[in-house]
Length: 238
Image (cartoon, rainbow, N blue to C red; front, top):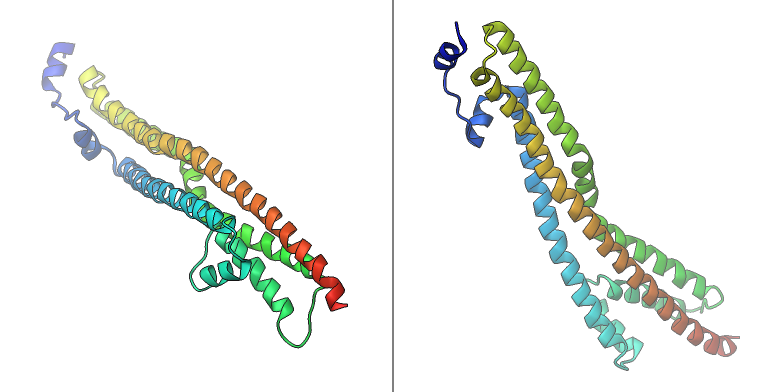
């Protein structure tokens, strides 16, 4: 059979994206569906985290305006203690709770108050950073593993294509091209899932770092304010 007859005898393959998926081996289909599902989940994380960081920044700005407005610490504490606090407000509330516990009750525990407040600040900052970083590891995992998962689908698809070619004993381009295209489609989907995940992870991780620096900076300033008040009260407690 000459090449022209072989091309006429070969069935016309559907080269659309949907056609490539439907004609692929079931293992390659599983890889494609898994990567597409991971891509959808990545985009949901990206949108959710982007909105979260915008909301967190706005809440931090609003709290700093209230904190430096001249209102008393007791008044601020009453305002934020009765509602769920995040960001700078969470740091402030945690420190003030320790402060009030030390001065309330039968005995006053002032000697190691500064260390206890600093410990509360560190724990709260760590908890807030964990909240901001939650699910970012999934983006990093897809960003690093996505291309390799797609490559696995490609290798499997190419193996299947060459097996079919050997069985049919037909090496015309019309027979070879569809199987190779189906296999390479898996790698394309892997890159489609991995590239946005990597870019988003780097951007969101930078936002976490900025938020952490802001939390730590406020914690240092507030700790200094409370430390001065502790020093003023030590002679009275003695």
